[in-house]
Image (tube, rainbow, N blue to C red):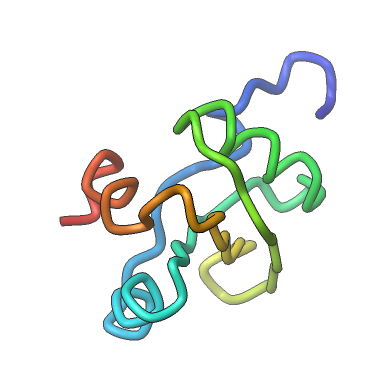
Amino acid sequence: MKKGQGPARIVIHPYVTEKTMDEMEKQNRLEFVVDRFATKRDVKRSVEKLFDVKVAKVTTKITKHGKIAMIRFTKDYSAEEIGSRTGVF
């Protein structure tokens, strides 16, 4: 993380579509729009700190909506529960 960039500045907001809702249930995964210059490591640390969870894997892609991070959580944490805390539902 760059100096002065806290977790809330890296993870901008949840990215919600029908597909992401399906992935949440099937793969224990959520998607977030993140800072375009954040690394996967930055995103992982930020999500773990913001939601007090453990992240199993982070993948990213660049779209017209910005940089999207697909976050898969460890089996100890539920993406549905985390999603409800972030306001996805």
